[in-house]
Amino acid sequence: MDFTKTNLKISGLEYYKIYLEIYTKYNLRNVYKRFMLISLKKVTGKEMGKTAIIIGAGGVGRVVAHKTAQNRDIFEKIVLASRTKSKCDAIASEVANRGLGEIITDRVDGDNTDEVAELIEKYQADIVINVALPYQDLSIMDACIKTKTHYLDTANYEHPDTAKFEYKEQWARDEAFKQAGVLGLLGSGFDPGVTNVFIAYAQKHHFDEIHYIDIFDCNDGDHGYPFATNFNPEINIREITANGRYWENGEWIEIPALSKKIDWDYPEIGVRDSYLIYHEEMESLVQNIPHLKRIRFFMTFSEKYLTHLRVLENVGMTSIEPINFNGQEIVPLQFLKAILPDPATLGERTKGKTNIGVYVTGVKDGKEKTIYIYNVSQHEEAYRETGANGVSYTTGVPAMIGAKLILEGKWNGEGVFNMEEFDPDPFMEELNRQGLPWKLIEVE
Image (tube, rainbow, N blue to C red; front, side, top):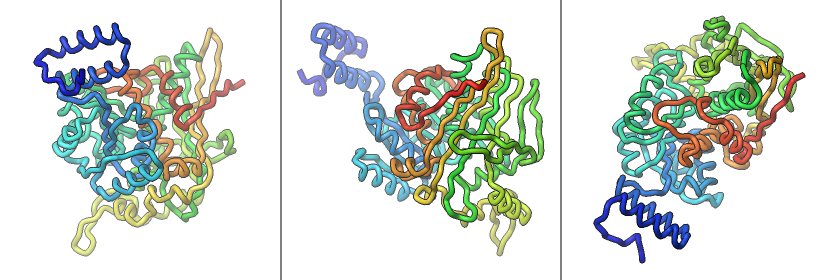
């Protein structure tokens, strides 16, 4: 019998009873898939095949497109959409040329909730992978609530007119996601993202209590330009020029931007200047890791990079306050973004490594211990595989993994979640499979 052509007027429950009877009697895997396809469509109006919409066609979007296409057993249909469809078309062509199959492309304005919702309904998406600007997080989340579709992003919401990023407004949508019966996964990049999972893994397997966490992020790559940012210049520069913050003994402590520096020895790279900055994963970790006494975040910057940044800041080019120029209102930082090299084009030029990890101290069986979990990635290898640099690669791969675990049902729930709230083990296993192997050192 060809079940794809049946017009039987029976309920979804009756479909499942028939499927179970046939599957049990004949043990036919194809019957399982075809019956599930029909019954799900009959009951919910959606096909069984997993469809992912990727919003954003920058460097990270390029990586997510490649990595989802490498995992077609989960991502059967992939749609890549952004405001500029030609960028999506170029990435889809790259993916096809690598023999990874078709990626559908479309145009969408991520600021427009109704437009995003129409895109979701058009393709009957199972999940939206948001790698657009963090300014667009809320509008895309609202579209997912409206259409009852799973949501994932890599960076928390940031208001375009205020140099501040926090989870507050995304967490406020927790109840709406519960009512919609879908999952919203926040910060499934590397940091935030993998760093949160590293800490959850440490908590599960190595500590009774975690007391101190230092997160270290080193990009030791060289792109050959006098000055360029590794990801969106507007977001990158706003993040770096903001005051530093860390959490200790139950309170947030704020210090002037880039005022605290330490020398840190990064495995496979060496000692580099590392500056304390505020980073978003700390906001959720202080809530979700009990017994924590202090958490800090450090990132490497060369003196040449900081010199350029200081000059730009001193002449007002990093300002987000609009100015009038020849009768037209412009934002200096947005203008600077337009003249700096596009981070999405840095892949071919960038040589060297990245090292991102967590240095965790706590107590196990009454004794103090320290571990260091980290990943080292090579820019050249990332480019060979995906056409992007290592910074985009280390963000895009975890985004795909988070989406994969949701679609497989290994990470599930209703509401809005941060990465450390799920079982870290399947994610850690996927990191090793998907190109981001990690190492763990027990520090003496």
